[in-house]
Length: 330
Ligand code: PMV
Figure: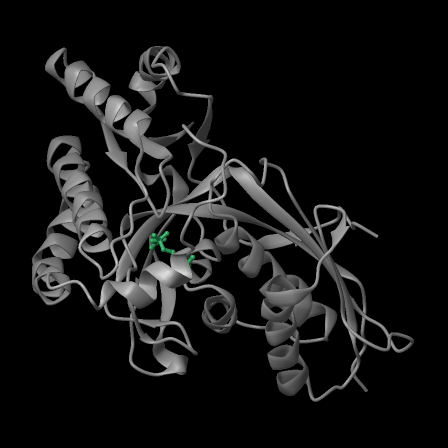
């Protein structure tokens, strides 16, 4: 007899150094390429799940509001997989909060689905390995597969649902990299990343990107392992420009960046001339993730906050991935 208990989990968002953009299988979120990321210790989601006999249907609450429609369906899909794996039919109550403003434009699907994967599977009595947890999180949102892992991770693309999951490249303390998340817009983006993934294949440059990625991924990983900030930063920027080139040449085109994004990129280039090394990377939105070493955080943060259009910054380091929490939300 499986014991159904209330469980909570906390999980970080992550920033991709090498991006996942384009799905080989859009139902199973299987990507075209491996991706590499660092998790973000200041951008966390906490989720509580309880499978309860008295519920007639699944109840999903996000940031204290009951949700319906597509947002609820995505959560129910994960609950359904957990029910199949645990061989139960019981409905669940789910509640989730982010410690960063959900309108900050920082992707919360990675932290949300990885926290959900751990809370839901353990509430259903399952004890999943890291690999299985990463697979379950991936089925909710591809990038969530990487949040499960502590520190720096690589999502191996695989070719089936059972071999597409993330593994650790290095633990959090390996390199003192920081991500200064620079909020330049808190508006909901025009096109979701799901739409962007779908459109990516219509870009005439998508195939070229895939060819290029083989050496870029290898070289970025090598530069990371030898803590070579110059080479690492150059490849990081090359990669994000490539993603946005694909987005802008998709049919119809998608523009995620705004004028403040470009202003921040310019200031980073100016700081580098003075030997202060911060490098930009942007996901499917205009906010800039500035990757730098601990010693340069304060000066970069101070300078960036003065750029007109910058609303706020959140400083992150790499830390532990998805873990249990005692902070039950109900
Ligand atoms: O996990 P999704 O479907 O939200 O896609 C994330 C896509 C990017 O954030 C742009 C890149 C990445 O690898 O995180």
